[in-house]
Image 1: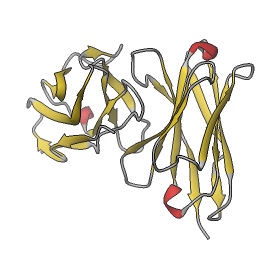
Image 2: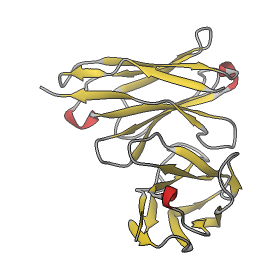
Image 3: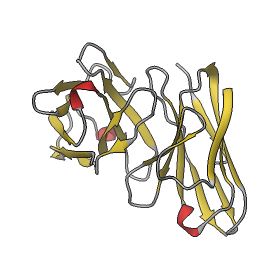
Length: 118
Length: 107
């Protein structure tokens, strides 16, 4: 079955960087669009970034544009989110999710917590 | 960019009640509208995609409708296990904005 497992979260100081990973299995990863979504404590869902199946297209939410970078390695069935210049308000659980064409985000990982604190 | 709003922000209803949640977009777009359910402490779950298509395994008491700028999620007979926050999301093109959510409780 579809499985998405995020890792790489932790406690980091403002201004520092972090790389999140999402390992996928149970489906043809190389054909699938992937997203990152985050949720700050007791807040709603915020869409962060998306990457096409072949990495040719990448888009970002306004609050992370220029600071976060999404990438993928289809040989490793893994999508990444590079978080740079972290701010206190980046504290959130980060989820990866797959997006089969036209079907919304149909499978989500359990999330990884990023805490930005001095 | 298209902004998404939801109403109400929260509601409390009795078991068996019909519940309707509205999602409104600041501009019209195609039917690439999804609804998600997030139970307390859990991961979001896709309920409906393409405005009205029920995701596999989702109970038939959930339904979606709408077009243009106005979309609706309906629970035909509210059950205790439906206590959750419900989010809409546009996914026609970036940014793939979520609505702010509607919290549903049992009265």
